[in-house]
Each structure stands twice: as structure tokens, then as C-alpha cells.
Image (cartoon, rainbow, N blue to C red):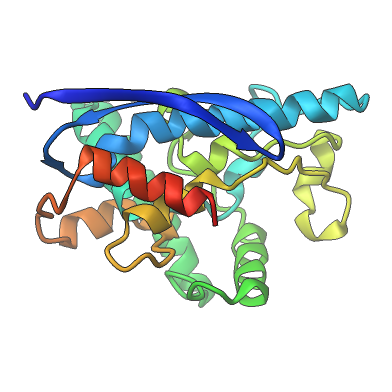
Amino acid sequence: MQDTITGSGQIRINGEPMNIAFTVPKGPCLPEALLPDAQRFANQLTDLAVARVERAGHRISCAKGCGACCRQMVPISPPEARHLAALVEAMPAAEAAQVRSRFAGAQEKVAASGLPAHGPPDGDQAAYRAFGLAYFSLGVPCPFLVEESCSIHRDRPLVCREYLVTSPPAACAALDSGQVKQIAPPSRVWAVFSRSTSPDGSLAWMPLIEALDFVAAEETPLPERTGPQYVEALLKELQK
């Protein structure tokens, strides 16, 4: 087991101070070693956004059992894909088989629709939105959705942590209606994490349903940076 190092400090997000802390391997590691801290950071930023909208008199309408948003296209980075694949691998055999079957079924439905498997490249926001709406129209549930609730809530992707709404749950069934009132976190940690951990600084992502196939086809990655270097890159990307 690698030695770890812990660092802490304070940053300002939209003028508000926030205490942050990271515990990462001292030496070379894979970027997913930073993921637990990135998840906690995303939670902190989301809490800031929730507090802001609540001070304005609004209420978050998301609740357990409302899985409307779990039929959206969920963008994840390669480190998150490896993390999700490891979760599935660690499940009891019968549960893992069910999850893998749901992944395969989701991919088959998307493929049958003619929608591209991956989506648009970084930077084309109009194409990204069109792809997301087309994906949502297929009604493909997340492979981890069980009885309209997230079965991996503690380990859910970064982007899922950042998605909360104040509009009625029924509005989420029509994303392009203009009725969905999503809260805006001070920063999109999922994108910051992706760019800071990709070799060339690009927004590397895939739809969640591609995660298992991506990991199965990927060559075993080698540690390229130390834990502190990943933290430095994330904080630098956050300040852009």
C-alpha cells in the first residue's frame, strides 16, 4: 500500500471561502486515486449552491424514488469509468451479471436508435445539448437504477452529484420544455476533474453506458503523475 500525503487549505468560490482537503498517494498513481476527494469537493460545491437557492426561498425537489434524471446521458471521465467497472467487478456474481445485462441492453437500445455511441467532441455545446436531448428521448435507464433509485448513490458519478432541481419532478420528464430549473453549482467538478486528469488537458468523456466496454478494451494504464501533481492540476484547472 502506497504512502499517502494529506494537504488542506482554503479557496474562494464566488467570493465564498471553502475549506478543502486532499489525501492522495505520495508517489505515482492513477488519477482515480484523486476521485474520493473530487467527490467530496463536488458535494461541498453542491451544498453551497443548495444553500444559496434555499436562502432565496426555493426548495430542492429531488428525492429518493424519483429517477427521471437517471434516464439522461451521464458523461463520465476515463478514471470514473474505471472506478465504476471496479464497483461492478466487486459485486456478488448474480448482482454483477444483472448490472452487466443492463449495460448491454442500454447500449443495444442506443445503437438501434442510430444515435452515435459517444457524442460530440469537447467545445460544441449545441451538439452536446442535442445529443443529450436525443439520448433522453430514448428513455434508457441508467444501469445502476433500481426501483427508481441509485443503487450506487455513495459512488455515483461527479456529474450526478451536481444535478439538482427546484422545479416539480414532473418537469424532468420533458427536458426541452424550459420548465426544469436546475441549480447552478459554482463550478462543474466533473469537467474540472476530467480536464485535470487527462494527458492533454482536454475534456475526455464518454456516456456512462460505455464504461464497461471502455475498460475492457483499454490497455492497462500506467501511473504518470504523483498524487500531489494531480491535486495541483485540479486546483489549477478550477481557477480557469
